[in-house]
Length: 253
Image (cartoon, rainbow, N blue to C red):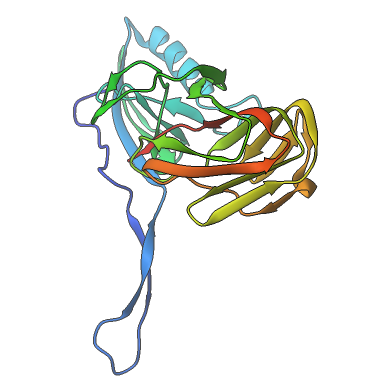
């Protein structure tokens, strides 16, 4: 990748406004971010035009999945080694060839315009601030998260150390007759007795599972989200004898 590659600070906005006849300006109903576009200036350096052609074909094949469609993959920049974007090839890919040298502009789009933490450690780490997490840990989809032992209704502190709110996966492992989780004015109820099982409440996808069995018909209320910083999460229910963890990747620009 060459030095002149373009990586925008933020995605462009999609503004929601309404013009009113006879009124200066417009009513502003807020905005959201559009997909984030990358344009990376790249070069392939090979010994001759034959090796260049082979390299071009391999690279082009890498951009596509087994069906021939542009595939999604993670991209991590050296300047942000602990954060990843989910991108795919979008646009056109022209190549300037000079014997064994090929130069091209590689267009990517991240339809989710945010980056996410690649890994999480229970040791003290230094990003924008020092964060100490010294609880027990479990590993779920590559994320190391604190475990909270729940035997009676209580309030726990869950630290979302990212810059933006996230929708976690809540894992409840053990036994209970019913489970209730509340945070930020939202309450989610799981109304089925569980004996030594694992309940997964995916708040992003709005999915509830007991093991691998769909249990969306057993949940009531709203799936919760975690604001940046410390969240005081209320956990209640009946017959509680379980551990609860909140699985997420911190979210950044």
